[in-house]
Length: 93
Image (cartoon, rainbow, N blue to C red; front, side, top):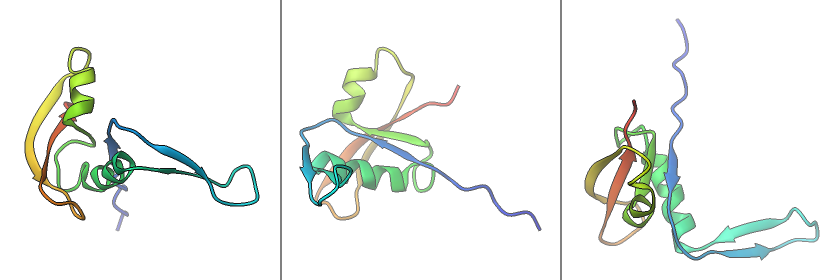
């Protein structure tokens, strides 16, 4: 029986972040911010509970809508967040 292919999703957001150095090595870096958390949540939904493998927030969509074919996915509940986010996906060609 063949194994199913893994499903990979991408979450794209726009917003302010903080780059944090947390250890003794120069590679011990972390990105912190609300948009980082939202991108992580969107990536876990993309291609699984949402039809597109690349999903973005409304702010990011407004920056790329003239260059990419977008699918409006409406307002969606995001785990760990109150309220809903208006999401868009990149339409496959």
